[in-house]
Image (cartoon, rainbow over all chains, first blue to last red; front, side, top):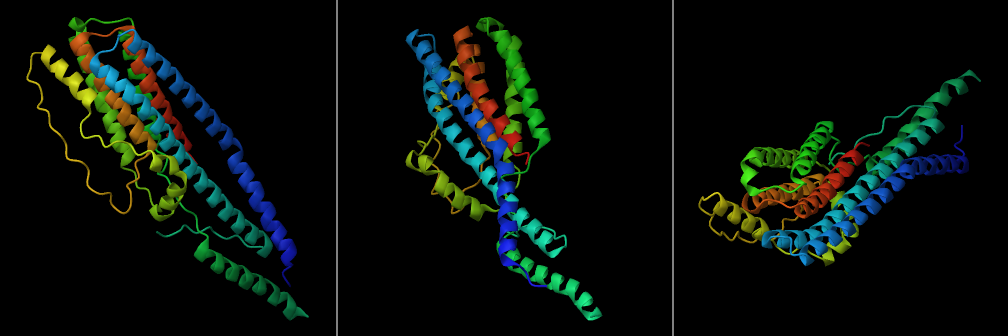
Length: 119
Length: 212
């Protein structure tokens, strides 16, 4: 029984691309929504802090804290975003690996367990 | 002809095993982030409830004379938030070599905008000093912490939720010490609320995203 490589390659491509679409589809909407909400909150906080400082309604400590806090909020967002993208990369990578193994299983007619990388 | 039927499944097995072995070396699943912890998420939701209730109480403006009624609530919240931050940070996260490569590519902005080294949280120290004066106890001495030494080769992974919860803890400490020394007006409470809710929603989003 010869292995038809063209058909086999087609099975792989189909399996992988459909898996990646399933994994990333809803996540991208989630991440976009989160980013938008956070940036809007940051804008509102900036306006509030500016208003409070102008009205001289903060103590000296609070003024220091909230002004520096705006920088902390921006950094926090970038940090969180990077880590969320890392999780997404992990999901995509693992989904592709699983899709490869599933395709092998379909072609060879057996079920294979996906191994976990040893670190 | 019968031997062909017997060879066919054997050939299948050999093919699949050969393919599996070649792929097994290169293609195994990875883990780049800590595991999802439902207890941590529930803890965060519970403490956020308490924080919001505190904002509701103080949001109308409070006098520093009534601070003793609230001090226990403040300290309970700060303790709970600190414990959750530690819990978030204590989870094992493998595959650091791969993650370092990913972060190198993604962290361009952070690399070009490094955070200034913070030796002393000036705002919190000032607020704490004012509260100590109001309670007529001795101020803590001004200690300058030594600057952190050169970074180790592998950066420690601090989950986004741990960093966010630390910010919440700082904000609650500021609120407590300002309440203690000056009382609060609704603008101060609103600013604090904006700060903590920003980081709480960040922490919750990150933790829920770990559910994968």
